[in-house]
Image 1 (cartoon, rainbow, N blue to C red):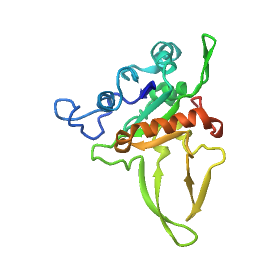
Image 2 (cartoon, rainbow, N blue to C red):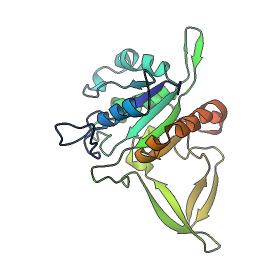
Image 3 (tube, rainbow, N blue to C red):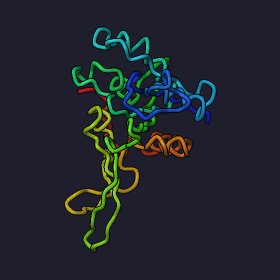
Image 4 (cartoon, rainbow, N blue to C red):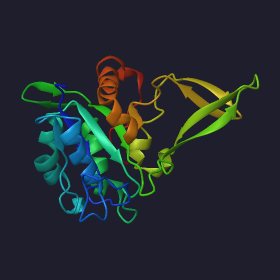
Length: 231
């Protein structure tokens, strides 16, 4: 593959589907087990650069921790995978005090180091199935009828069910191509800088999604209104 990939994920989220090869005592799997699967099956060598364990409180460390634990890894990558999982958010903490939003923010930065600029990473949100094997907590399909009476099966992405910095970098193309069906916008093409894909589809065709994210990063980034800072 030849690309460095940084993976951001909620380490201990166990509200995910059971992975036969990777689990804890044959009882449950966590988001970290999905990272292990990627390392063993979809990436090779040091292509995959895993994020840190999330059992530390980021609010205690802020920029010091980010510099020591995150910047070097993200600097050395060109693509960031964010594993979307049902319990990735801690509702008792501010977004700025949680690991994943910081990692997304740094992935989208432009930073100068050693007389070189590092541009924003390509971004992919890989949606993990929940314990029941469903993706519907974040994405699902439903039918909408256009003005000609034709029915379309449309994919819905629940951007409200994740961190704000992730949701705001979806459907953020400055001049999107869309239709209106039953009062709702239906987007076409690469309407989001952060590409959203189910785990099942991603592991089947990893290179396709990596190449799509790379193309957006290298050729189309100016077409998107990126939110880079945490609010």
